[in-house]
Image (cartoon, rainbow, N blue to C red):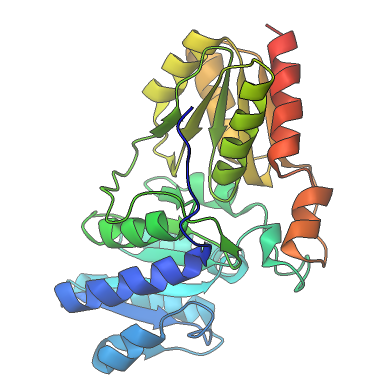
Length: 317
């Protein structure tokens, strides 16, 4: 099996910040808005280098979305930044009406998603944001797996015409994808080819899926691993082809199993190639306070849970 190396753990939010800084240098139409969390979103460098294109709106997320929508009319490409909970749930009406319905070219960039937000607890750990955003017509939904991919995605969405929800996280995680990669919106990335089970993962669970595949290989089980960074539009061709090859699927995500990647994959398979599927995700619940590692373990969002789900899916073939 190919060995994927952690080139040094980094937080994905820093990938966003560094990508935004480079965009500020290369694209004069890029503007940034933040809701009083500049340091947390790693937007400091953009602010320092382009103060005339940075707007600190304070704790007024709804106003931030409205401002961003208005800026697109003048040809600007606004990137909004705050926690995922405040980027979606708090301002859903403004996103629906002013951005999605109006088809505005706003990039909604959301950090601190999922339970790996950690000690701040359930009120901040949104686990339903992917579902909220993917249900909006015309909204592209991206959930990146490491620093390099987040940086590449941040730069790529500036060239994409239309509303985007870019989701990333707080903690340092394995950084294993290529530097200066070609990020293609809507295109799945095959990490391992396999014949016994397909593991389709997104975000922080991609690295866990790689570890699970290695463990399964040691047990004589050949696992195909696919990194789905774009949940909408989903690369349905890749999903269907993999399911036809292996005969069973495991989806893995740091999100509620209702409304997330797993549900999108299930709908695709139900429509085109019904296949046994197991879900590694949180149940119909909120999170709680704890360290990221503790919470990933408690909620079954790790390599061990993926291995168990893969073995169960194989028995259902």
